[in-house]
Image 1 (cartoon, rainbow, N blue to C red):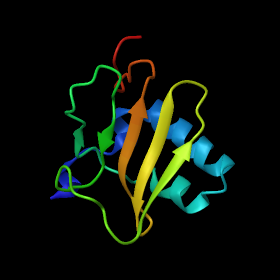
Image 2 (cartoon, rainbow, N blue to C red):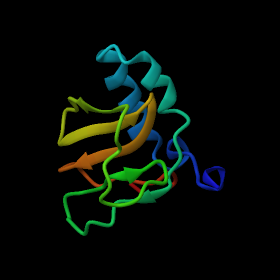
Image 3 (cartoon, one colour):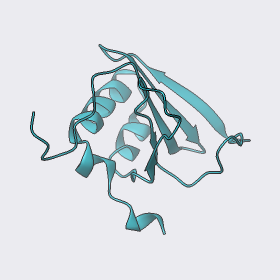
Image 4 (cartoon, rainbow, N blue to C red):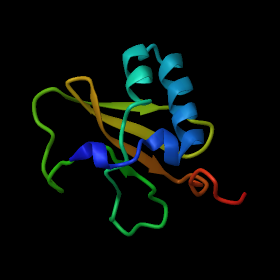
Length: 108
């Protein structure tokens, strides 16, 4: 059950704050609200050292999202961030070429 997974905002509050600001700047107000509620289902396991992407919903690896999918690229100050969204639900947060994500409470 997805409610068993932590909220991304509780684990990576700085990332969620940045996503909210970027989404609002792009006029994606519905997604800016949704990003507060996404859960950390899993980290990407591609093995690339530049990837810190986050799965926010259960989805079979390597399968297309299908009808209702759209990619929402954002313009962060560093690296690349894009969201995979299906019917208004954030399914995946792609985080590439950015400084390491620091979980809440981790030493800086």
